[in-house]
Amino acid sequence: MYPQEFLYTQDHEWIRVDGTTASIGITEHAQKELGDIVFVEVPQVGSQVTRKESLGTVESVKAVADVYSPVTGEVIAVNPKIQKAPELVNTDPHGEGWLVRVRLKDRSETESLMTADEYEEYLKKGSAH
Image (tube, rainbow, N blue to C red; front, side, top):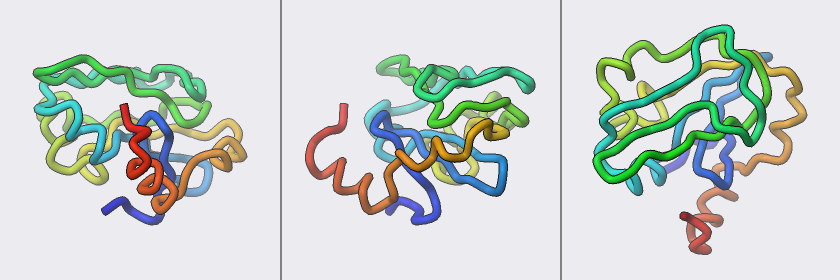
């Protein structure tokens, strides 16, 4: 269910690394827990994000949840589609529903993230919140 080429956090974000840049979004599990997403707030291009700190929020009909950055870096792109159609985060969280792209400051930060198999095991253990 979870793309093998992505890495995952315990807070249910995913990251897809491509050289020195990375795309970030929330996982299928996270969007299911949140329910219908009605608004997404992300930083502007040029903003700095810090590993394990909030980079924005996802608002659903049930709750507002922080999205934590899996890495430190500079925001180089924001998904323009999610401002007009936040439901893309529900319908395609690992594709069209990506949130931001970041230029990595230190690629070694990705070494502590989970593989798809590890993330699925993590979910099975009930560590989800």
